[in-house]
Image (cartoon, rainbow, N blue to C red; front, side):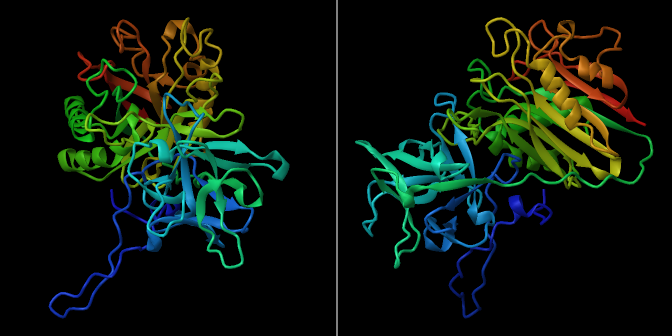
Length: 461
């Protein structure tokens, strides 16, 4: 839960607090701001490099969070994530600042300074008209170069970076055509390198639980428009019934739930927890880019961030990574998330596969075997013992999970009544591991979800 400097890209927000007025003659002090509740995500981050200025685009906190292309070296203030929703599916996207967690808006109302279409990272979300743009490829200018096109309500406006002699690099959605000032390169921020193999570990047991909480996709679920509090309470309640698991895998989860769930686990179960998130994505049409699919807002209209999977592991976690799984074109691009627990010499991975079968994303179950093999590879860090699972959207009888069954033991396979249903009458939720399972259980009810929780104890050898 503590904000450490172990992953500077995510947790190293610059100290931007303004100096407070002195009280009773005491000297003023500057306080570090609270990190945005999007710093728990392993989603792909991007830097914007202006071809006009040769500089990176920054969100300048000291300048009302305006966007200026005048940074020589990228850091947290120069990093963004791409977002879309279940309606646009990548045809329009929104930029969100890693520095303050706000979406970038093009201010077509013109501020007091009269700079029409000025870009500022100012919106908590969910993104609306001024936050939605189109990425227009500019292949003649090189790979990964795009124009950013907004609609001001009457016509299209392209984003310019002021590169004049006296300009300050301000980004404004004001141009009606693409010229030299309107071209930007999207530079992917590299994923963390593989961790160093841990010291040889002794055999030990790990209690784990997986639960698809149905936090967004199914309007008939109680969590469809939930805020973080009720969801966190049910996760903790399930964990207590299970007997306090040390690892929790969560699917159909909203990004901004991560920190509240972490705090709830710590306050109600004790110990230090680290909850991490990875997004499901949509392909941006006509590009190689993918944008994170956002959850729908909660019942009060508040943004809940991206939609995907999460892991809750001990606070000692120092490494995590999102993995894109092979997915059917035109549908949700599925994901897996892995994290390490060094003292256990264990790697924990959660995943949510494409829906297979007639009438669904993967009707012939072509991609599900590929996803199973990709998950197996992701969970195979040298020196670490794997514990993995999630909502894999296929019954054992389909045979598409062969890569996992051949590599690991499945929790419920050797129970007195194996392959108990976890969603309706089907078993589609799993726990696999590089060891031996015992005490595998399936919840008697779904709670506010449409899936039953699954749990068990894995002996790592």
